[in-house]
Amino acid sequence: MSQRKGAMAAVTSSKHEEEMMELRRGPWTLEEDNLLMNYIVCHGEGRWNLLARCSGLKRTGKSCRLRWLNYLKPDIKRGNLTPEEQLLILELHSKWGNRWSRIAQHLPGRTDNEIKNYWRTRVQKQARQLRVDANSAVFRDAVRCYWMPRLLEKMAATSAHQVDPAALLHPAHIAAGVGGSASPPVHGGQHDATSAPSPGSGYSHHQSYPVDPSPSTSTSGCSGSTSAAALPPVPCFSELSWVDQYGPYADLDGAGAFDSAALGSLGLDGLDLGPADGDVYPDSTTLLDYLNSACTGGGAMMTMMGGGNAPHSSCGAIMGGHDGDYGPPSSWRTDELCQAAARKLGGDHHQWGGGI
DNA sequence: AAATCCGACAACCGCATCGGA
DNA sequence: TTCCGATGCGGTTGTCGGATT
Image (cartoon, rainbow, N blue to C red):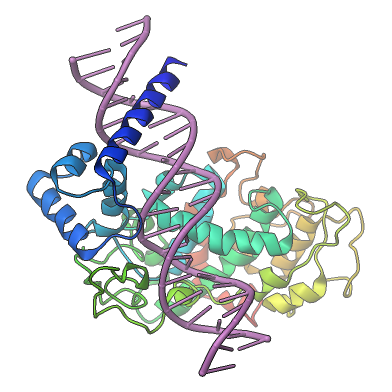
């Protein structure tokens, strides 16, 4: 309570200061960026309010901090999220939920803002189209059973002639940022040439400074491609549909059914998917069972997740189970997953269902 | 060619927490 | 112990450019 009062007082005073100083808002100009960078070069990071007052910037300390952390900091990595990074985000989010900064710590060079945006624009979109909650167990299962294998396959495809998949997927390497963060620091709009080219390299199109537009601001490429290239369209997710007997946005864990036509469109049509289009699977057969069977049919998932046949368990259970919480015990095991996947990648990864 | 829609992302806002006085 | 400023975090909004109609 007292903390609350204190916070309010702080807010009030900062509002007052803002009014006094006529603080700037909105997109940063090149000039402002230079001021901020110069100040930090001289004085280091931190003490943002002091920085805001002394640097000549008519910005709040908060705004300065955000600009630095999310955009100007030299080790910020820009460009497409690699499949490895996407995989890691999916996995870590299943463990920790919306703990963006915590997740970001495991993706060197990526900011919490970037990860959050990725989640909201890509992952949540898929969940919306499935009409399930992105945090629901069933969605997480679907991610595990479909999206992740796709990413792994993508990783294999892109790294096959460059990197040993086993090495690439080794958790220690992921933790160290391999596949996502090996690029050296970049600065001042110069981007790592080895990473996926940032659309409109240099400052992004959003950084076309209102005051001094950079001529390097490209009109080519652009936002839409950020990770669309890394993650091919996911028709499967987009086109999956629930038999809507449990209501929209319900957590259908263990209670839903896949439209097999949609599944077919996922590229899983090479598998034995059971009932025909539109069929609702028998009550005794849950979605997850169904997915399991599909995975088993594909061969890879079950092996990949370190499980054997578990006819009546969900993918989640296979991968370590889920209990509705984000706690580590219920999460899938990245290390095992990656290692198993790597083993798979070294061999018959085409078993994943082909046609993707 | 113009209008509209949509996706992506930078930036802002409110709240919580931390640490020092 | 309390107060207060600084910082961090997560949710939301605004803006821009490309795609589509």
